Length: 87
Image (cartoon, rainbow, N blue to C red; front, side, top):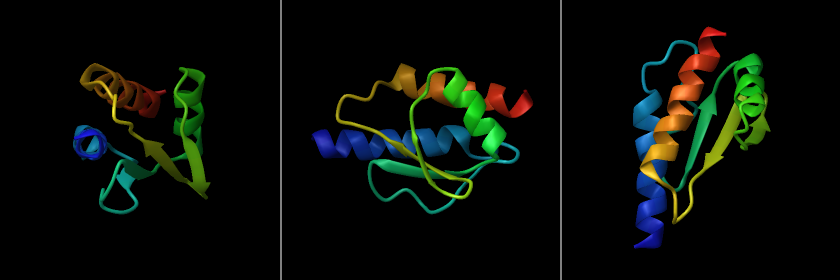
């Protein structure tokens, strides 16, 4: 159940950011990670907002979701990503 929830959380995040200009999944979500291709300035803006995630390589960033990921936090991350694109 925990792994299923974490995996579903990564997929929910991927669906929430689908179609955002300048942002795309580097690979399909297959686990509790979403690998997102986005400009470095957007990643920096997200980090300035307090989000923690990994720089995988280049402009690919890895967002990990745990067994206790909350839907409201996923929605807030997606919203902050939308705002960061416009900054």
